[in-house]
Image (cartoon, rainbow over all chains, first blue to last red; front, side, top):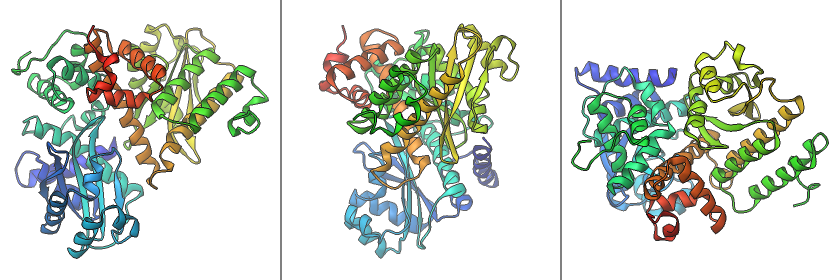
Length: 239
Length: 253
């Protein structure tokens, strides 16, 4: 868990310097300064399954995010369809030009060379994507890649909180939160809530998270209660 | 595919009986034809239970933090899944993962290395446990865990079979993606772990729709998958999408 703890510390330091609670912006800034592979952009999943730009750490990244949203084509649009990262060291590689002709041409015009996209996925739920952009050729592997992936995992947790309307994040249990979102019962409970309330899976997960936050209990404990029918969430937010 | 042509068979057929050989042929055939990792790993854990002295078998794979996550189990009973997941903290699988060597406790009643795990295992009636590493060249990607109701552990021969099963499990996780893009091992593992989450989500939805519990829902999906020859992961996706294609499976009754 050392890596998760280090990543969380980097995010917290940036927030602390601004005397502010941790936000998604701090996460992106920490990713940029820690991974050192380029500037960072964050997309949310939109209703139409196209990437919706949320934040960028540089004007350059902002342009790439906007390009993606305008064209609806490129690595982040592709990342929304799958659950593994897309690591492109050079967008002038013919394989990528064939795959995303408009994006590669326009992005190259903006000076983009390397782009690394990490889908923020939890099973069948994709809440967004974290992306690193560079105007120089970069390759991401080994410890640096592991670090970037840990930021993507942190981004997943933070984006879910953001979408669940939880603005201030308690950081003490951050490592355990990264572990608990992989716990089988959490996802069984998510599926049960979706079927009980006849809502989408992502909304079910956010309701589960919101309930866990509001009652100060872990996701795993709340999920156990849902599975054993000791707790049933309702659409009006009560239980 | 004949046994002679099959690379998995050659190394084990000399020491093992025909039933084991047949199981490997059957598993290898699925690796080649229409292939779904989740289906495959579940079948593999069930073959282990049938062929070895184990009562329950689970497969755990490591994520980017070095913690172990559940990929498949011979039974979806909640308590077994919990026992497997407990090994995020300590347990034979975590040891096998760290050392790259098998870890064993022939008598859990006198075991002191993993107190929380041991207590939970004994509470479920297990008295010995074996873990074998899942290795790819020099890297360990996870471990397979076998639980026995009697003390004494597995015979040496059974441990060798278990290791062969673990090797095949490794290949199945890695090869599924080899044809797509040249991403790294870590991405392949992450994808497999994510597929497992999709199955958990579908189990929950189907449990409510069919008025059963999540492990009952898994059995229903598995049965439907077999009857319709649809990969388990596809069935799970269709359940989540509330597709009319799986109406026969999901209709409330």
